[in-house]
Length: 630
Image 1 (spheres, rainbow, N blue to C red):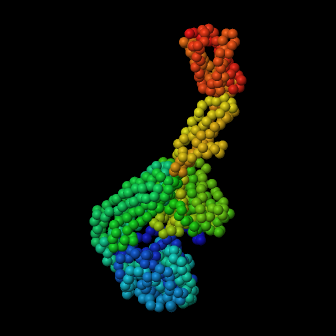
Image 2 (image 1 turned 90 degrees about the horizontal axis):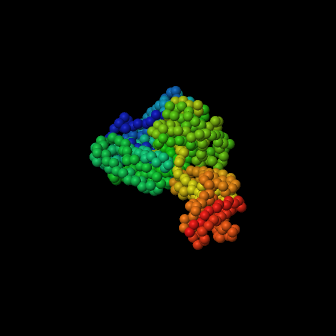
Image 3 (image 1 turned 180 degrees about the vertical axis):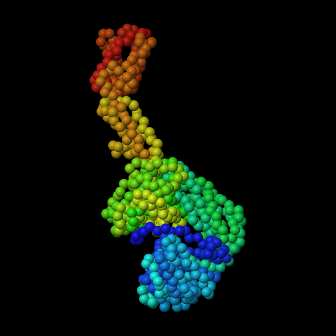
C-alpha cells in the first residue's frame, strides 16, 4: 500500500519532439498503473549502486516494427528533488523467446551472453511531475522479433537527492525482475526477485509501410440507463508507417447486453500523425455488460489493431472508470487533509443521490472512516456524503454513500466526485489493477475546497449514483371508497417485480382497512430501476343509508312511479340486502346486491304502492316507498 502526498504530474509527450517518425517507440512492459522506486536508479543514497535484470515478453513488444533498436529509456512519474543525480550507467540486451524470467539471481550469471548497448553517464532529472529519460544506444541492437532480457548497473558518487525517483511499472509478471542495491560503491551480485518491472522506452528504426495503431479508447465505464442520454465513444488512431495512408476505415462494434455498429473513415493521415476518431452517439438501454471494440483492418502489426472497452449499463450509476467486476484492490492513502477526486461531466440535467466508492482490501482500513465528496468545476465544495466506518466486509467492494439531499447537476458541466478520509495511516482508496486503457483524470482537492491539482497515482473506483423516476408505477383499486372492514383489491402496474409494505410480492393485494390508510408498493423494472408509489385507500364510516358513502349522493329510486314495472335503485355502497314488500307487508322478493345499483322488476306484480328495505353489512337499514304502474 502507498501513502499518497500532494504532487503534480504533467503528461508525457514524445511524438515529434524526442523521436522522429523514422523511429518507432513502445513502452515495454506497458505500465499497468503500478510504480516502483527500487527497481531502477532512484537518486537516493540508498542507490549509491544498484543492479537489475528483467524480462520483456514478446507480446509486450508487438508494436516494435523495426529490427534495429536505437534507443532505451524510462518513464518517470517524478524525478529528483533539489538536485539532479548523475551516475555511471551500463545497459545490456539479449533476444529471447522466454515467457517467464529464467536468468537466475546472480547478476554475473544473468548478464553472461548479453550485449552491452550503452555505457556512460545517465542523469536523473529534477522534476515534480512526469518526465522521461532517453539514451541513444551505441552500438545499436539487432532485434529478432521476440522478447528481450534487459539488464543494467548503476553507480553514483552523488550529490544525492533526499527523495526517491518514481518510475512507471508493470507488476503483472510474478518474479519477472531481479535486483540488488547498496549504499556502497558496488551492489551485491545476488539479486532478489520481484513482480515489479520498470516501464521502459524501447525505440527502433521504423520499417513499416502499412502500420496503423489504436490506443486510448474512451467511453463511460458505467452508464445510467434511466438518464436515457447517448454518449460518444472515441479512439486515438496513429499512422506508425513511414508514409501517408489514405481512406482508413475505423469500426466500432458493440456486443453484449446492447448492440451497435458504426464506421468512420479517415481520408488521409500523414506518417507519424495521430487523430481522434469520434463515433456516432450510442445510447444503450438494456442493463448488463457491453463489450465495445474499436478496430482497423489488419496490417503489419495486427496485435495493435483493436481496443476493447467493457461497459456496464445499470439503472442509475455513471462512471468514467472501469465498472464492476473490475478489481480495485490496491490501496492508496491520503497523508494531507485532502480528497482524491475524478472529474466527470454530467450526462444530463439530473439529481445526484450519492456515490459508490471502491474500498481497498488493506488490513489497516477496518475501523477507520471514509466519506464521499462533490465539488464543482472550480473546486468549490458542493456537498459531503455520510461518513462510514470501514468494516471488514467492505474491503475490496464498492460501498454506497448518500448525500443528505439529492444534488442537482447540469448537463455538460464538469464536476468532481471522490473520497476523503478524516485520518491518516490507512489506505481506503481502491486502485484499479488491470492493464486496459482507463480514464486517469484524477485530482487532489483540499477537504474544504480549493484549486484542483492533477495527479497520476492510479485509477480509482468512483461512481455517481443518480436518482431515477423509473419505473413509473400506478396503483388501481377495485373500488375507490369502501366501508369499514370491507375488502378492496389494489393492483400495481409499471414494474417487473413488486414488494408491498406488507411484504407481499404479487402485483395485486387484497386489504380490509378499518380507516383511510396508505399502501406503498416498490417496483423494479427489467433494467434494475427501483421506484415506489403510495396509494391512499379511502374508508367511509358508512353510519347510515341516508347518503351514499362513495360520493355523498342520496340513494335514489328512478323512475318513480315505475315504468312498465321497472325501476332502478342506485347509490348503493358495499354489500346490501334489498327486500321488496307490498302494502300488506308481505315479502315479494329479496336479493343480495354488491354493486352500486340494481334493477327492480315488478312487471309481474299488481299495480300499487310498494316498500323497498335496504340493509347493509352493518345491519343499518333504509326504507323507500314507490308506486308500481303496469
